[in-house]
Each structure stands twice: as structure tokens, then as C-alpha cells.
View (cartoon, rainbow over the protein chains, first blue to last red):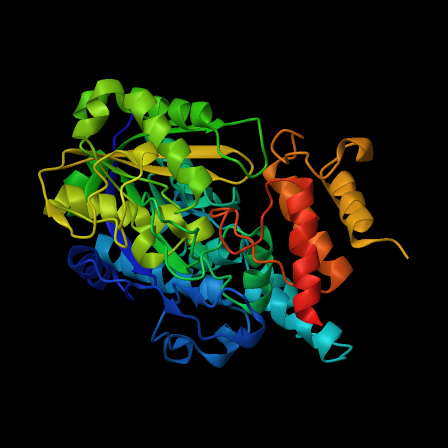
Length: 402
Length: 86
């Protein structure tokens, strides 16, 4: 089995337009959630979100590119560019032919779908833009990264709702570990902060109208975000031999299915995924220092996740730091695991654990050290990142300090 | 004309997949075995049927002034929303 290094990271998210600014926000407990600025906001009941601010796609892309790139693809391409440039890799010859891209997204090009439905249903037009199909398809972002960087190996997208990017990164990890590919660009992207996307979520009645307060007794639901997180996963020996700066080691991954309910989480499924990730990494429970929780801020998730952590780590769970950075950037749905993996990288590499902000009242059902409200200096050797999706898919990744 | 009570009961019976005969005003929603999806769908159907907006968040089911604890409390809450509308 080969070892897996992370040699590049990039992001566009509500906290910043690169990794460094995102780390700063994590350290300073700076919120990225605020009033939404989108079309027809007056017809929405939920008017807050983690929106990407200062995004100027016309400075990043040509008009021709923009006619083909949904906001989802735009985020992914810019984040991938940051990650690949940081890695220092170029994909010539055999390396290009065997390396690939695996991304996660829940909705794909939601804004493109929304705009074209609006044109035909609401504005009475009988035509939509000619590129609606290639722009909205869920695999568009992964394939544009492949085209831009000459990645000619396996490139595809997985969609498992809120677990999408963890599933994607887990598959990328397995491909390198097994020797199937030398380098995989992986992570996730999501952009459904548009009228139709928000309306759909509003209908479920799990959204908060004021703030995302994971694990706090007065929590009132999830807050939606948008953005992308993209990493370069690389076979360890090659990375070492070329002198790459290794940000962290990916040491384990597991995925399970609840096989129980389409929206409600399940303690047993989450527990099996965390235990599976530890087994996959060859780690004992007491070697884990930090868990970046799924922590959506809904009643259902938070109490189930805390019970699953207690079940997995037994008496040791009181020694764990468990934070939900969704309190800052919101729930990036299919991209959320990728942005949250950044918090794990920061904890391992810089010894700073990102907090759970907005924490106001302890909840006996969530009695863990949730790193409330301010970031913490701590020595972190091993971190887990949890993601649990609608449909019952659980995907947990384990990272280790270099 | 069918009363608000009968219409609400029909909606809960259909969306919650419960036999109508069980839906007397004192019946508790939890004891009827209606799950969260059934409740969210019932509330949506009530909004559509009566042209009202129901304040309900699954994370804070008790708050917002719309009492979903029993069939009777839902009927009373819907009647209040209809009265407030006119």
C-alpha cells in the first residue's frame, strides 16, 4: 500500500478567496455568514447565507469561458488552480496520462438550471442558452479541471449530498493508496445560493433564519453556504523525492450507509464510519486529537453525531476537540467536507484548532469540547473529518501531521 | 362546505399516512407515529389549502406559535392563522 500526501490546497469560500485568508478567519473566529444578496430575495423566508464575497469571475475568465462555466465550475477551477500551483506539479507525459480529478457536488450547476427555468417558465421565453446542458451537468467542474491541467486519467464526479466531497476525496485517497493513480486533484464545489436552490431548502424547514449555532442548546438549524475546496493528493514517495512541501498525510478513509432514512441521520452508521476510518488508518481511538464535525446546527444531526462520537471513542471522547466550522462558513453541501478538511490541515500543520462560533448555551446531548467561540492553540497529531449526507451516506477521512 | 377541522384531518391522514378514524382532536402527533417528513409535508399542504403561512422550523418545533403537539392543537393553530389573514 502506498502512502498519500497532500501537496496542494485551494479554496473559494465565504471566509476568503484562498487558503491563507480562510486560515486567518478560522484563527480569528471570523464569521462568513451574513445577509444574502441574490435575485428575488424578498420572496425568500430565509435571507442569510454563507455567500462568497468579492467574487469577480470576469477577471478570472474570458467571456467564452464564462458562457460554459456555471458558478460551481468557476469556484472549482480557481481553487484547483491554487492547489496545483502550490503543489508545483505539471502534468506532462505519463504523469498527465495517469493522474485525474474526482470532485463532489450535490447540485451541480444549480444556478444554470435556475436561470433557464426562469427564462422559459417565468419570463415566457421559448429558448434557453445553447450551453445549458454542458454548463449544468454535475461533472462539468471535474472535467474543466481535467481539460485545463491536462489530467487524462480518471476524472469524474460523485454526488452523495452533504457527504459528496468526502466521498470524492476518499476515492482519490484509495486510488493513490492502491497504485491506480500517482496524483489526484480532489475535493468539491457547490453553488446553490440562488432563488430556486434556497426555495428548495426552505421547504424542508430545517434552515435557520438567524445563525448557525452547532451544538448550542438554542441552535435553530443550518445555514447554507457556497464555494469550493480542492486538494492535490500525491503518492508519498514521489512527493518526498521531488522535495514537495507536504501539508498533511491522508492516512485513512471509510464510508458506510445508514440504510434507514432519506433525511434523518443514524448513530450506528456514523459510528461505523468513524471506526472504519481509524481501522483504515491503523490508529487507535486515543490517538485522535481533533474531529472536524459534520455539525450542521440542526437538532437531528448534532445530537446524533455527538452520540456517535461518544460511542466510537467511549471514555476518551472527553479528551477530543470537536468543532464545527459550519458556524463560520455555513453548510457548503457537496463541497463542505473539502473546506472543512482545510481546518484539519490547519490544526495539524499550524497547531491551531478552528472554533465552533455562535455557541451560546450548553446542550447536555452535545456535551463535548466543541472549542467554543475562539480558536485554540493545541498540538494535533491526528484529525478526523466527518461528513454525513441525506440518503444516509457517511464518509470519514483521517489525516496525520507530517 | 367542509370545515377547517375536517380538511386539516384529511391532510394529516393523507400526508402522515394515518387512518382518519385515529385523528380525533386529543390524538398526539408523536403517538400517531407521524414522522418529521410526514409533518413537514402536512404543513406544506395546509399552507396550500388555506393560503396561510405556517411558522414552523423542525429544529424548534415548539417555537413560532404553531402548536403541532396534537391534532386539535394543529386545527386551533390553523383557525388562528385563517382568522389573522382576514
